[in-house]
Image (cartoon, rainbow, N blue to C red; front, side):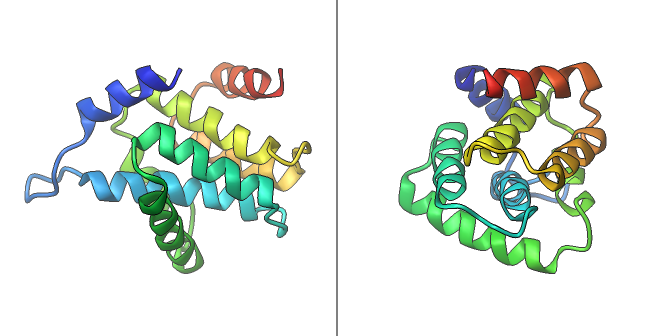
Amino acid sequence: MFHKLKILLRQVMHDGDDSGHTSTQDLNLAMAALLCEVAKADADVEASEHQAKVELLQKLLELPKSDVLALIEQAKAKVEHAISLYDFTSQLRSLEQETRYELIKAMWSVAYADGVIDPLEDAVIRKVSELLYVDHKDFIRAKLAVQN
């Protein structure tokens, strides 16, 4: 699962330049921010949700734990100042469909880390899924994959 995601992320990541491409750091920050959005959706970030974010980002981005922790702190600050989820999803639309599916699956993993999917967490993931043009069947498939 994560191997495919890593390959696809490498294919679409570019260093930031004047060509309009999003930098690797911006993509990483956007993904971390979306995971933070899910964790804080129910206003109660459990330790298990934080741990899930760290583990998923380490696997997805192939970064050491110290870098992931710093990225999460940056993402939390970004989330506090964001106007909408579009601030993050607009940067990720260029990802391959399978990569976007894996991101939705990671969001479900964070939401389900505490054993309960709150309706607010569901709503955030549903909205991100729509903004990333992830088919509803893939939205459901990701949810079921995490619950099983």
